[in-house]
Image 1 (cartoon, one colour):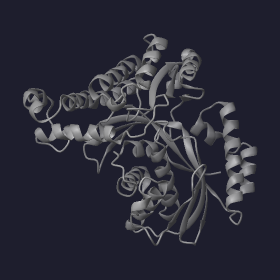
Image 2 (image 1 turned 120 degrees about the vertical axis):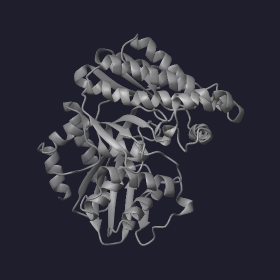
Image 3 (image 1 turned 180 degrees about the vertical axis):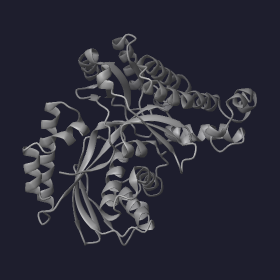
Image 4 (image 1 turned 30 degrees about the vertical axis):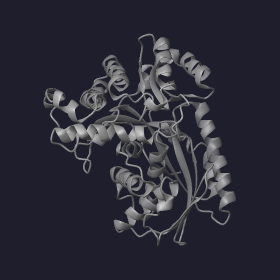
Length: 428
């Protein structure tokens, strides 16, 4: 389709059903998304005036629900795609150049004849584009060029994994246009992780990419990371009378790399003593029996973090089971347990080097006061700074959001819903 055909489709309501699926049933939200897409179309036209034929793509952010710091130990996680996304307007060509202009960022330009890792690109989005293209090329996919404009509501620092959403978006563009969609959601997630690990230079697990790619509530078992076991869980929190609220506490992520890196490193040291590469393969009873000897070779914090893994790995499985059974009371109890374990054992609610700054513990304390035993609250994502997650009864949501915004600044609290689909091409 061309730009005018898209404008006509937006104006005559042909995308309303798609928008309802991606962003929720609110008429107000659908109108807002129409305006967002029209604005993006106008910017695409200004950036690439010679391009007329366009394709649309969308990839969601994700919310980790259970399994805090379990994936890197080949554990189980429970997570969900959410209704904020990154979208792309794309026009394909034979230039041999991938040219992506993302709102608020410098352009990412990759020559598909030069797909080796570039050291100076590490930590920048262009490395992800190059890495994803390289993996598809390695798979035998014949690539060509394209121009794209992207705009994202998965903001960096929101805890909703903007990087995974971007990787998923680029993976879908390449897979659907040049590979006939043969890779599919699971392989696209693995390709995104490859690009992040090898080209971007971040040793991430696979959870973020997998949930963004698959969509909905997803239970994932990473015992064999090459062949993760994935199960979709169908549950409608809105119908059950709850909202998913993510609050950005505005804590700084600066200089937190050592804190993040220490978690898998310490867990791995315990696993190695138990004769394993990862804690998933260790025996929990042997772990507790070995604590006196473990204390001679590793820190008490490492032991506590390993204890968190054993409990959290099981909780992630039980949380999925609770929702499959429609048991919200059991689910919320498990989520609260997860939050407590992350606080006491995993110890990832603030950096020990910045102990004066405890935004997340403050937000959780305030959340518990407002919820008064209803719903649940926990750290969200990797921790140490950033966001918390709360399941809030619908009738309390306006008051909860207002209080979080009052403490942490206007717009800090994001009221979300679960998106049932992952990365897609939007067809008019």
